[in-house]
Length: 272
Image (cartoon, rainbow, N blue to C red):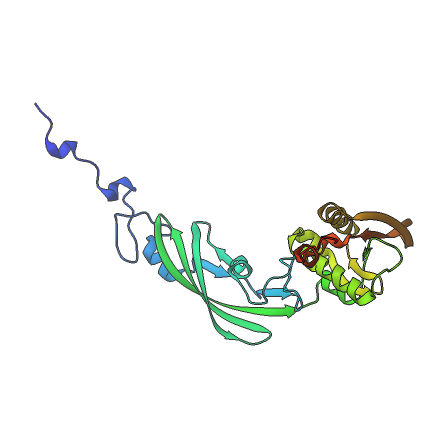
């Protein structure tokens, strides 16, 4: 005898999950945890908690953030970003955070108050929840800015003309070499530019001070090839640290007039 259609039917949703039902709403077609379905559980529990005492330590000069024992993101804005804030969110193990939209609702120099709209995935469903966050702002000068303010350096890049004796007015020489520096600096690597500390004008050109001698050496060699210049390197003993000699290095870069963008732009006149 053929089996009835009822005997061939699939088991009900309730039977497929072991006959569980939500003790709050009574639904029996969804899985439960601690006797509650996902919707009811979300109403009575914080799916995403906020860390205690959230604090961002930033450098007021360059905007770098202190992360652990290291400063990161130098040159960024002092405004808080999602990268600063998301680390203070603590989702439950079942929760995945997809997107966060932050809105600042209050601010003073020391505390920022924000509301976040979080798009999350919880037990296979998408939902949006809100969180409130108060972040303490602690200003602390980073190591790089502290060194720059204290005129710390490990290398000097001397920008000079081709001849040791000055054969043109100092003002014109400095202006020409200054234009060359300003012209090539945007093309230099970011880590080289970050190592730059300050510059001083000299009768014979410019002295460029660097916090990192390796960056100074790399930039000096790059400018030599870029400008067709002559390069000389001279180390000098600065002191001792941990039983080892510490050297500062001077790189003298003699730059031809043809490297000046204004020189190349001027029309050349032929001799009679």
